[in-house]
Amino acid sequence: MKAKQRTDIIQAYVAAFTNLRSDNIDTLLSLVDNDVRFSDPFNDVQSKDSFCAIFEHMFKTCDKPRFSVTDIAYSDQLAYLRWEMTARLKSWPKSDLFLSGMSEIHIGEDGLITAHVDHWDSASQLLAKLPVIKTLMRPILRLFRIPV
Image (cartoon, rainbow, N blue to C red; front, side):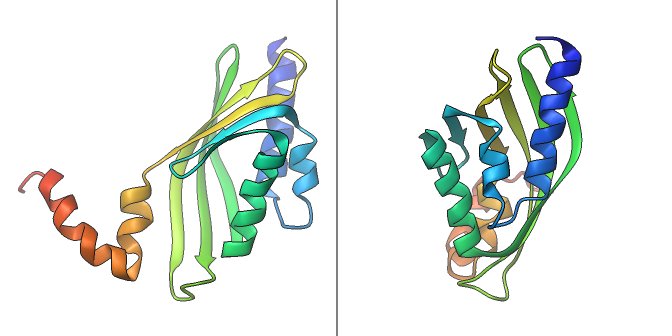
């Protein structure tokens, strides 16, 4: 696959990802392989149906989730997307989310996305900010911090 083709595929994926809404998940699905793998700190699934379920679940649990891609890097078979996500948890209305992470996007020879692997710190960016969990996590996080 030529570099221009990879760039075009990733640009289409980024456009679908950053414009994602509950009523247009199909746009994102049209760019992924039937056996696509999705992995993040909470999930590791492999199929287009499971991939779809991840985003459907996000829209069920979050108000107005939005992604912005702040940087893209390419290698021969992968693209790396640096992204930020904002949302509000429906179950905790005063809990604004701001997540920052990186995704490995694997591209198959046929031009479809074969894997979307998210890397982000769920402990400090999410769990430590939830009311009950925050109290439980503080002592654990202190164990790993250097004294300043």
